[in-house]
Length: 199
Image (cartoon, rainbow, N blue to C red; front, side, top):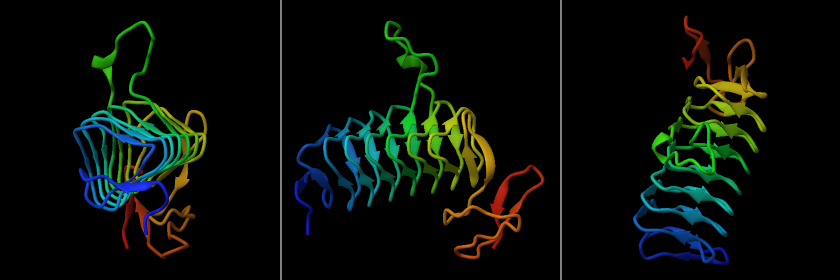
């Protein structure tokens, strides 16, 4: 059963789009994706299957969103931002694409990319400064400001964000034993200080 206001667009079989939202051509949207109120998908955007695009979201142009992503309310994904599968973007989190913007200076040739790895979480009101990558299954705490690359599984908090621990694939903070309290999966740090799943 389709929720009130959600309609299927013949351009995108199996996709539900709220009647208050707009999708510009060309765009690619996978089946099972829902786009809620007052959102705008610009041209040359690719969105995977089974995504949830919340209220007042802007994506594009030239942005890729993987499958099963959840983009919460009031998020803008500007050109240069690309999300892998299973990424969670919390309400009102912020992405940038220019490091030194001025209203009177054209800087479209200076966009810097931001890549977000599979399974990563961006907390509510966090800010991701452009030109950095966020590793898979990293967890950015609410309100954090990311100004450098983020390791896979890192738990980042503060302004500027610093690693304060490790997170499991299930989204649980790891203790000294590096065993996930939810699913029992085991992790280990390599000699370079990176975390990896070992069992």
